[in-house]
Image (cartoon, rainbow, N blue to C red; front, top):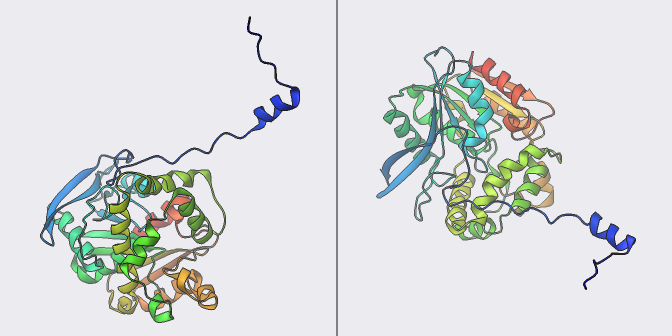
Length: 334
């Protein structure tokens, strides 16, 4: 007869107190298959650089009486259109039509193996998307890399830009001119291949949020990490490497004085984002990404601009404090 196994009290306590294994990040496809967006995803099919591409986007109608205006939301490099979830709700609730695309090479859009990434090309793709939807003029809101793209869009299509809102845009300084060493695309790719949930979280906590973290941020980290953990890792990493090369080598800060549309800068003051800081000398690395100063400098360069500073927020105020950010965004659009 088998007797039940009895554990000594100390051993039983040890088993009870043992922490559960850490949850593995989800696995998503190369086009973020498996990750649900807050609104239906549509696809703009077009040809660019001799290949068929698909650009995913959300087209959200106003949830109150329409005011006749459209807002275009441009995501950052470490973000997707879904990250605008709260802002979309606020904008649609204020009467705006909202278009939130994923750029080619990102999230739910195509991952081309060979593509000449440029801010001008991405702006052109986005302009073609709006044209296909019958939209000739929009308020352009860009965050992080999307801020660089939004500035390029306003320069390239001034008549199609009713207003410009830059949310902690990168590219407020020219890192290469500041002394950050150049690296080739293969080096960017090697770095991208090391990306994981833990590396994304550690980077964002240190650089984006001033060392602080909230559990709700994990969802957006898992969104990115899932693509790197999935079967499309190599394709995702390669396009991200091409995008990093684009960002580093195509500064827009020198053209800020040519921006003619009304512009609002929404700048979290705890942001310290600087592309290539890992290769910079310790002295230079310390100086880069000074957003309190960079925001003021950008406001001086852009005519007809207004600076709104979020004292205790970081790189992603729309994620960190959605209600406060949405209120500031809607005020800017008034």
